[in-house]
Amino acid sequence: MKKIRVGIFGATGYAGLNIFRILSNHPFVDLKYLSSHSNSGESYKKLFPSFNTDLVLGPTVPEVAEDLDACFIALPAGETSKFVIDLIKANNNIIVIDLGADFRFKEKEIYERTYNIKHNCPEILKESVYGLPEINREKIKTAKIIGNPGCYPTSVLLGLYPIIVNFKESIENIIADSKSGVSGAGRKIAKDYLFCEINESVKPYAARFHRHQPEMNEQIKLISSKAPDLIFTPHLIPMQRGILSTIYVFFKENLPGEETIKELYYEKYKNEMFIRVLDGDLPSTAMVKSSNLCAINICKTSDKTLKIFSAIDNLIKGASGQAVQNLNIIFDFPENLSLTNLPEVI
Image 1 (cartoon, rainbow, N blue to C red):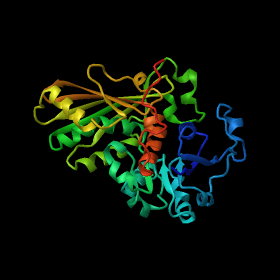
Image 2: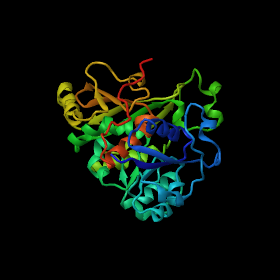
Image 3: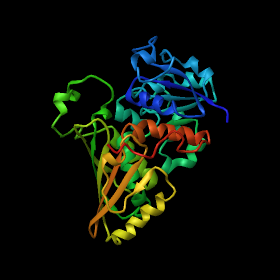
């Protein structure tokens, strides 16, 4: 099979670094271009000696698209929409997988209100596909622009999906409580993320409003317009990676038995290689560390209340691994190519 030529815009952040690491083992990918705003002109190997490559970081410019079949864009919100039109003009056939927020929404008003940024190419939103494979696989297959989901939405939506589908009109309230490792904040220097600030402490943040909440609500409404808005609180925990979401769902009518509900999960995810519906154990971040897995279990606590537990690695299934999963789907490669479903056990 012929190799595809791939570039990574924003190759020095955590997402870009992990995309490079994953694609380095991909038999049908030829990594041709890496960009960095602050390190343009530097040797990638010099910056990251663990990576054995001769590539030199270049600027984030659209002209390089002429020599690429696909690109990953791991830039802050608002940056992708500034140059993606020129990127497509340079190569109308290029596949764009954006790990930022610019193509996650169908409604530009929601995006602009959420990020307080004007969207520079709202017409392209109509063409973009929300890249959650377990929900949108058929749309992803023919997409040219993918909005890779946020890390919190990935854990919450995968946990909720079978419930929203099967109890569309019966859900009264949804509350999601999520805890994330510090890498979720990105590779930046800020006081709140210094070791002495986070070690031996757990704290909520963005309690009034988190940018992933509108993303989750839009996707939930696309599954069921009658579903309520989700209430969401994120927490920062003193570890490097991983997200654990506990989701509380309250219903208007009595639920069937827990085993019956569990069967809905088994049925929905029976062919999904990256979803583990657990039998007895509750999910933990250790179960999915450094893998593209999502571990899920449920607990019925009353006739009208359900708890859902969902764990992912925020850097892999919550970002880079899912992005490569989308690439594999689009180019008709085996979906798990270069993506391990074996977590680090210690």
